Image 1 (tube, one colour):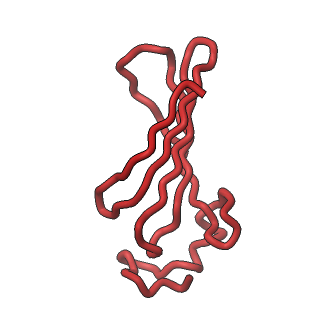
Image 2: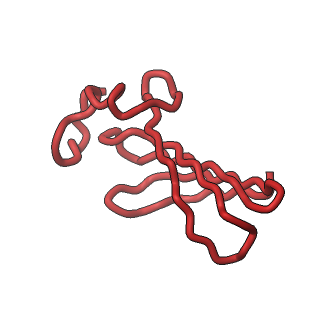
Length: 95
């Protein structure tokens, strides 16, 4: 592993984040775990890869939700029934 960053994030929701970055031949690959401070949305895992090792990058990120029942990566279709529809459901989600 080339590096790891632990911290917090803020936005429409806030929470904790862990990012692991690996150096792979001519580029970097990484995975980020986002754990929101609320149960109204699922935790997520995000995969990223750079085109090269330049200091300035544009990346596309593949984000998958984590199933709160198993702790494993899932698809939204498999877990959406655990969450309220519409605006974020505050603290009264179905979990």
